[in-house]
Image (cartoon, rainbow, N blue to C red):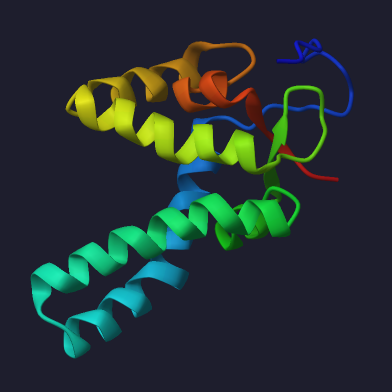
Length: 141
């Protein structure tokens, strides 16, 4: 994992509130309409499973093809990058989404709370999933 210092000009860490806002925008713009359609097309339990799968694929794949951004991140002008400022690749995103999701699930959400605290108090604003994946969330130009 690269460990370039975060004080470099090209990496300005994005904090908790802007990251939360980007996630909320993704939920409203992307997932609310999808969940409404799935609810009317399928049984509730099956719709929840499809929704989880689509959500995982969205957060895993879209940043690979869209310079580290989701729709919410693009609106908020932030993006996911490797710690050296380069674009993320599939390995980073698998670690960020899948492995960290397993860790959050195994710990019954406690690790997710730890991640929120990390983003709030760490100077580099990196959450647990960022540390696992060798990524950070930064403002775009």
